[in-house]
Amino acid sequence: MITDALLLSARVTIAATIIIVVVGLPVAWVLARREFTGKAVIEAAIFLPLVLPPSVVGYYLLVGMGPGGAAAVLRLDLLFTWHAAALASAVVGLPLMVQAAKAAIASVDPVIENAARTLGSTELEIFRRVTLPLARRGIIAGVLLGAARAFGEFGATLMVAGSIPGRTQTVPLAIYDAVQAGRYADARALVLLTTVLVFTSILVIQRLERSGIGSSGRGPSHPAGPSKPPRRTGPKERT
Image: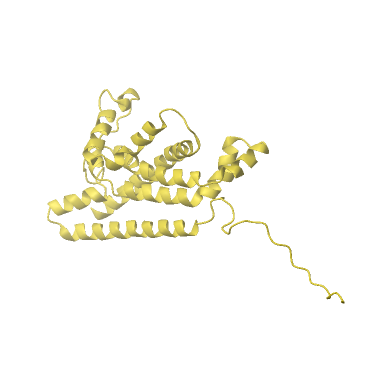
């Protein structure tokens, strides 16, 4: 049971992380670099999964994946599959990635990007060659946060994927099932492993944040100012 849950959680987390990066990175760039009507509404909608009860998020996903939902229109059968678990994990992990990546991109000095524009670079080239390298630490930290949150998702996953051993039962669901069945040794092993993985991710994120101080392209860390010319000394005048 433990091995199956770990392998399934790894698959779900990898798939969710890919979705988080593909969707979250462009969204973070738009929110950091563009002003438009309804921006506050879009930001609020993106961050809703952070504060809504997991059952509410799961209900919305259930409606979207059920008959008459978007998945049915696209002829996708997602309910009670690991794909549904991956999508639910991506939805709850996306806000953390967007929040961190948006702050990292906003910290990049626009003067550097404008300089690239004057040299004829397209917006995609500027993002790939200028913005992304300078904001990479914050973006990586956001991806790790989103992946850690995706790994630990429980409520929304339970509603859209269920808890089918070997098929949709991820580590959080396996812990709950083990406690309910009185298999406390399995529960302790999974709890310890989850704690170590998430704790390690947090340490890596903190290290990235510390190493990224002063490297966002805002200029030198010391105050700039005119330097005083060296004082010239010469022989004393004879009186």
